[in-house]
Amino acid sequence: MIIIAIFVFSLLGAMAIGVPISYALILCALAMMYHLDLFDAQIVAQGLVNGADSFPLMAVPFFMLAGELMNAGGLSKRIVNMAVALVGHIKGGLGYVAILAACVLASLSGSAAADAAALAALLVPMMVKVGHDRATSAGLVAASGIIAPVLPPSIGLILFGVAANVSITKLFLAGIAPGLLMGLSLCVAWYLVSNRETLITRPRAPLKEILKAFYEGVWALLLPVIILVGLRAGIFTPTEAGVVAAVYALFVSLAIYRELTWKSMYQVLLSSVLTTSMVMFLVASAMVAAWMITVADLPSSVVEVLEPLMDSPRLLMLLIVAIIVVIGMAMDMSPIILILAPVMMPVAVEAGIDPIYFGVIFVMTCAIGLITPPVGLVLNVVAGVSKIDFLATARGVMPFLLAELVIIGLLLLFPQLLLVPAQWLY
Image 1 (cartoon, rainbow, N blue to C red):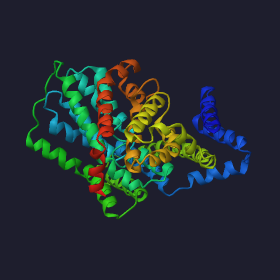
Image 2: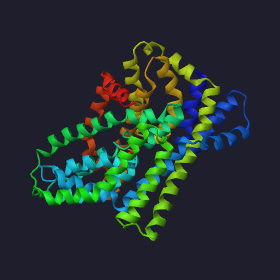
Image 3: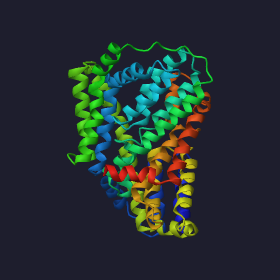
Image 4: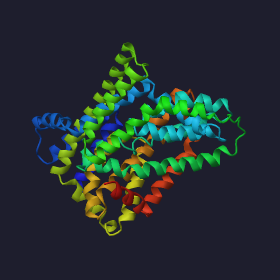
């Protein structure tokens, strides 16, 4: 119990006085070192270097680069055009376009913020123009954006796989069914919401326009197929899939669509490098804390605390989900994964919970935190891009947030909804 208290209070105390999360993790590790009489600055330095020196983590910068290239090179725009041509004429069709485009973009980049920003810039003005409420439209785009951390290639699943030592390929394949269920839940919620609005409906696109949109967008649609087939067939690892995605996006942007200029290329590289550096330093700091968590045998202390729930995996999962939802209101997804995954995974294994199932539910719940105030990274991004008040966007996202929580609840009650498709895909 003492080590749990040191872990919690040193981490939260550092964050409370404004210390950045990366440094707060290092201070947390130092506090545990001091308590165990293991203080050594060399351990911290080696931990930082070794924490970032990971082959699976190399997938993160490549998938981030792929996402930036797709937004700058016209792939994202063409995916939206395909969705508009296909379902844009239905009442509330632009909402379904947002959900469909988010699912496709999620299978390309794995970055919730990047996908949501692209969709907000393209679709929110169009949705407002046909009569949709601006805040509700922004809320739908934000909720659609968090499908990206669940569908492969998910950066969240990569981080979880590294932090908890779980197969990233299996996590990727297991995330497909829950990600699609999230999209389906948003369609149901949007149907109920949009039916109450008076809208201007778009004319049905002629077959020629649909075929043209698919002809122009087929290059973008090929990327998720290449990644999933390659992973399923064992042609390449998740890290190599990141390289394939980045090279393919660069080729299509330069040679096929020809929208990527050398000037914009510089901005793409700069943006991806800045984002990657922040994530990788956070990962390196978390690995120092994770090493101390292992040395201090913190998971065993947590198991003792949760002993009454160890015989009821569903109740244990419900408690863990509730904890993550609450923490997600104040912390971003990446630090939650890197801090809690090494602590909670041994607890889940002890309770007989499938590690892949646990990992996907864990990341799904962390993704919910991206659209919950007061932090809500994706909510902030969409509000900024759409030029809408943050509180209005938070109100607009509530029906869709509830729909995605219902899916998590169903997966807790019926784990087979996740496990059966995952085992089939393996």
